[in-house]
Length: 461
Image 1: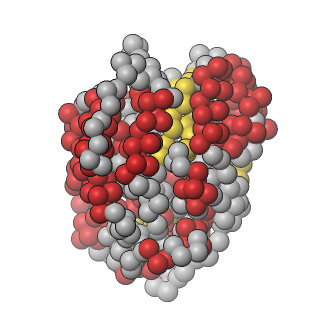
Image 2 (image 1 turned 135 degrees about the vertical axis):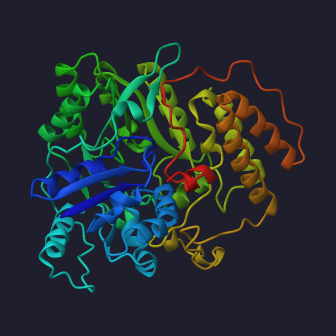
């Protein structure tokens, strides 16, 4: 039986979320085809041969693209059973079912996906089949990556003054121990954290290095949810591949609590750490339940600078509690901390998403700020009490998309955003310093999981 796994988008990285379930299916005798829409296109002939099509929706951007692609998939494979899985699948189950999807699975779908395939193969699959959406413990195995496009086709590592390097994408854990209110991991995992066995992680690293990878990007929601587990992996990887560098994502809270681990990260090849700063306003941080402050942000900037690891901060720049002055304060903070070159411009345009099941809905009075759920936006729309803030967000989003296509530098876009924000607040923009920070290692794909997809992304399949 033919099964097709489709990835709409995953930050320009070769998706573990296709490779791992593919392994489960292949070892049970199924014919599996993987399609990555960031690189490949939907082929009606290939789709028409499938009995089961599973679409991976790990993030907001991917889900928006999946919904755009669904009609074409259905037209090409009218008799195939359709399944969606990943973080954004359970919370949008009703909407996907309205669009003709038969089955919705969660963030760890392998076991249920295999059961589903076996039932379809036996001809006993009833239309009403609804697998459990609870997170189950599964067996992790070495993911089958041979059916995906070559690593060289994906985003690469950009190093100032050096040639780009091919990236391996690895997951060392799933879920997260924390309950940040705006995070899409929380409604599905609710504080559950699962470590992937060290030997499985290392096998995946080995096969990707053998395929040409020179840098490893760990895709865990937080690499230090299990600090002992993480330390074992990076020490074993460095011992076997001392030339390989890597990057990770870590909470501010964990960076402060586990700061004694930072020299080990540096020694084993960590080039940069992505951290969800989200805001420089402590009230906003409390609303988001981030468990850090703006002062903590400044502290980790110094800690990482001293140890020699670059910081790549992310933000939810626009939210119902920000003001024009507050947005300018964010820009000014990036200037003060010399982080302008460390921030992809899309981070200056991110607008707070409120998806179904969001823990933001638990904030007293927050629901009153929201409109009815919008299936196009995949969230509850909100309007700022100051229309100028919403206008600024739209203008910056448009500017960032345009400048991305023009390949303008981070500094050039920041200068335009700086001017735009001050103009919107009817203020004169101060002259920016000559030095705004140094360029840091980064991925060539600068878009983001919670960003609205570009028009090109929505048509690129």
